Every structure is written in C-alpha cells, then in structure tokens.
Image (cartoon, rainbow, N blue to C red; front, side, top):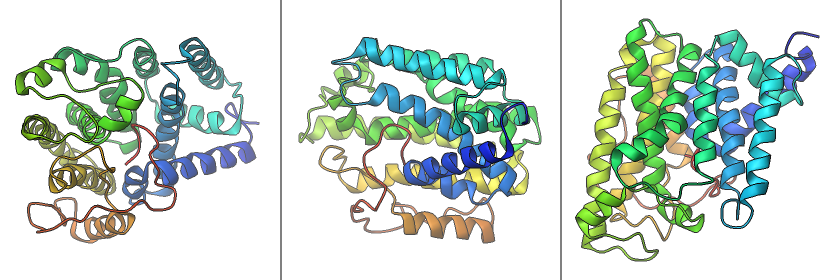
Length: 319
C-alpha cells in the first residue's frame, strides 16, 4: 500500500477520473490530451473532485426540496476527501484525487475556498452586483485555476493571476450558457444590477431586445476575462501551453455560439461539438498555442450542435 492507496486502487481511481472528464467535461478532456500522461491524469483528478462536489449541490431538488440532506451529503463528501488526504481514502477515486493533491503540491487551503463556495449554493440563489458574484466565483472558479497551476508547472509565479482569470472566464461562460438550467434549480447567476440596468428578466422562451443587450454586455465582460487569461499561456511549458490554449479556445467558442443563436440560451444548450474539439486540439498541437482556428467572427454560420452521446445537460462544469 502507498500512502494514498494500492497501485491497483490508484489505477482504478484515475480511470474513473478520466471517465468523468471524458463524459462530462469534454473541453477539459481534449485540452488534457495534449499533456504527458502523468500530468493528464492529474487534470482528470482535479476535474473529478470539482465535478462530484458540483453534482451534489446541483442535483434535482437539492436546494428547493432537500437542502438539509444535500448539506449533509456535501459534508460527507468533504469528510471523505479529508480522510483521503490523511491517508485513508474511502474509495479508489478519492485515493487518486488525494494522490494528485500530494504529488502536485496543491495547497489544501484552495479546497477550503472551493467547498465554501459549494455550500453557498445551498443558501444563496442570486447576487446583487458583479463584485458579489465574483466573491462567490473566488471559491468556485478562480481557485480551480490555482488548483490546476501546479499540474501545469508554470515557468513563473506571474502565471497565477491569468490562471485565476481563466477559471473565472470558464465559469462565467457556463453561467451564460446555462441560464435556463440554473433557473430550474432556483438560481440566477446574472447580477441583479445588470438585469435592472437593461430591464431584462431571465424568462425561459423570452429573447427580447433587453435580453440581447444584457447578454451582449456579459459576453463582452467574459471576453475580457479570456484576454486576461490568454496572457498566461506564454508563462507555461510548451505542452501545458497547448493544453490551456485548447481549453481556452474551445470554451470561448461557446460565446460565439450563443451569439449565433441570437442569445437564446433557453431552447437548447449552446455547445461545441466533439469533432470540432478534436480538430482544435490537433491544430493547436501542430501549429502552436497562438492558433485560434475556429471563431464565429470568421465563420459565417454556426448551426446549433445536436447533443452527442454522453453530452447531456449535466451542470456548471460541463462543456
């Protein structure tokens, strides 16, 4: 036995982390393909931890009908994670996750912020201002950029802020894409001050001028975050840079698709199809991380993509 689990348990745990990433986080999966295998499995492990916790708080009825049970489930999940870090993992998946934390030297304080944000979803259904939303995303998004950074082995400490910006950019994209799904859960992740400013209301099936103006404003804000994050690509080793450039390119294309759908995020989910993810990863691998091969700004028409196997509506960490 190792400190985190037997070799067989770790192999099984990392296989499950890879499955979760491939099934629910295909953008992360295709970005990680460009990494050496040891780093790739660490990306899968960090994703799996966040995914599993997110699924607890995003389960149907979690906040509307069974907040106490959901809070208990989240607490038990956190306890299992803490036990794994202490050398007593409850299952192979958690053994792999804890092994990644130890091998990569991820600061455990990051997980305090992350689990704190997950708990906020059980009590807070909306945010008044952009700074208020950023306070939440500090623990639910920016900190994930910090978790990933030791895996990517940056060349300079200056990569920290771009990594945090990328986490924020990813999550804001998810919020804009998933307005309808979040409404179903009783949550609105668009600042109330912005809704009031544009006279918009997130009502399923209603895409009027006020809604379009609001979404255009939020998308521009989102692209500014991607611009801040892009500066960090050059601060990474070549293969890590290709990984991050692929994920950044693919995630930002979701914004292109929302625009191409006339800001309708209610009738269907804006998504980048798997074949395009594969082509993007291959292109960046060959041409380098500065390549942005697909964009609605240069492609005249982007038809809504139909769901592919394993790409159902599965929460804020899907892409």
